[in-house]
View 1: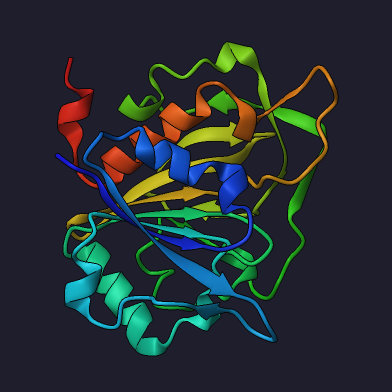
View 2: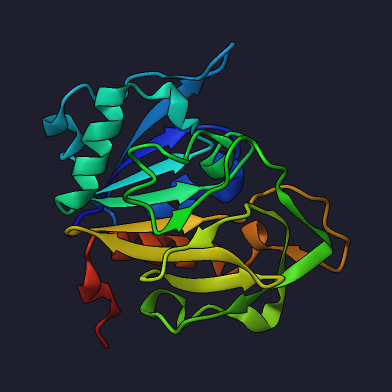
Amino acid sequence: HPLTGLLVAGALYDYYRIVDAHHLSGYDMKLRMVPIRKGRSQVYVGFPETARDLFDHNVIYLCGADLTALTLRQKHMLAEYVRRGGGLVVFGGHKALDRAGLRGSLLEEVLPVTGGEGIPPLAALPGGVPLARAAAHPVTQFADFDASPVCFYVHDLQPRAEAQTLITVGGKPGLVVGHCGKGRVVVIGMTCFGAPAESQIPFWQWDSWLLLLRDLAWWAAGQDEHFVE
């Protein structure tokens, strides 16, 4: 099935290589970009105004997205999109997750994690910490963790009891997945910050990263047929 995506493209979306990963989903894939205009506050340029427009996409990526920039109506639409079967992939960053009005928002209710109050500092992992496989899951089964990709900063998030943590970094959840209603949600708490040493591979340049991100989008969209051997 074609993977039709909507990318809210804030800071770091090019570092995460979201566009490249989505293009790997198939020759008939589609990806609509919603750029974020920066000023005293973020503005989502061209974000869907109706639920019908939102449901034209089977996966939505939120990257570097300040949730306070969404109207109450847009937050409600996005939450209902997930509950009714949509796929959502949320990335970390300077203006994302616990640093972007997550706590107490309508979207916190659909995510498999909870965040702290205010804008806490990102948890630093001095020198870089290798990613570790946690719970077994189809989307990580072929990822090469022996390559020791590293992460330098991660959001300080708490997985919900029913969520699955697929990747940890320094004992903290780096990649968490979960369900809400009929929908599926992915949260990537690892950020593309930090300066790797010459011998280190930052996770966003890891050979397995693009395939992992593609498979996460397939999973979020409910396209489990890709994982059947």
